[in-house]
Image (cartoon, rainbow, N blue to C red):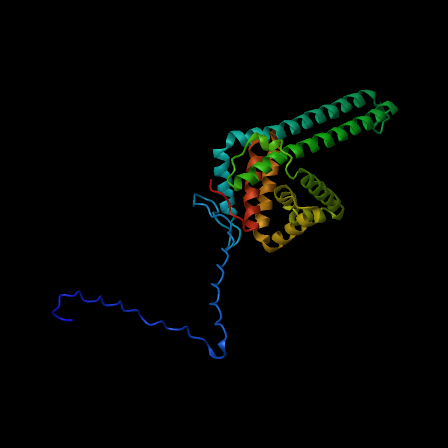
Length: 296
C-alpha cells in the first residue's frame, strides 16, 4: 500500500511481438535466391609485344611485311652477336672450303694426267683407256665428296638458322644451337624434298626450279621452328608467299645476291653473309606469320 514503506514491484521488460514468417498461399516454402553468375574466364594471352627499338618489328605485322625493318634488325643483331654468329658460320665455311680445295685438286690432277697421256691424232687429242678410266674414277670421287661435304655443310648451317630463329624470340645465340637435335628430323626430310623438287624443276628450263624455290622457300623453316611435317611445311610456305608476293620477291632477290657474294673468295664471305641471311630471313618469316619479334 502506498505510504506503508513497502518496495514497489519491478516493471517487467517489454518483449517485442513475434511476427510469424510470411508463408505463400498454399503453404509452399519460398525458393532459395538464385546463385551468383560464374566469373567469366580471362581472355587468352596474345603474342608478346616488346619495347620499341631502332629498325625492328615489335608486334605482329598488321600493315604488311617490312623488308626494311628486317634488314636493319638483322644488321643490328649481327653486330651485337658477331662473335657467336661468326663462330657458327665458320664451321659451314670450313666445310665448303675443304670441298672447294679438294675438288679443284682432283680436277687439276685429272687434267695433268690426261694431258700427259693423250695422243695427237692430227684432228685433236685422243685420250687413252687409262686416262678415260681415270677421268670417270676422278669424277666419281669428286661427286661423292661434294655430296658428303654438301650434306655436312647443310647440317652445319642448321645451327645458324636455329640461332637466328631463337634470336627473334629474345634468346641469345650460342654455339650449343649447332649440336641440339630439336626438330632435326622434320627439317632434314623437308629440306631434302625441297632440294629434290628444285632439282627436278631444272628439267623445265629452270623456270620450274625458280617457281619451287620461290613458293616453298620457307618450308624448311617451318619444320625447323615448329616441327611441321613435309605437307604442312610446304602448304604454309605456299600460303604466306602467295599472300605477300612483293615482299617475298624482294627477300628472295636479296638472299640471291648474298649467295653470289658468299660464293666468291673460296667462300670466306660466308662468315658474314650466312648469319645475315639467316637473321634477315627469320625476321621476314616471323612477320609472314604475324608473330612478335624480340628487340635488338
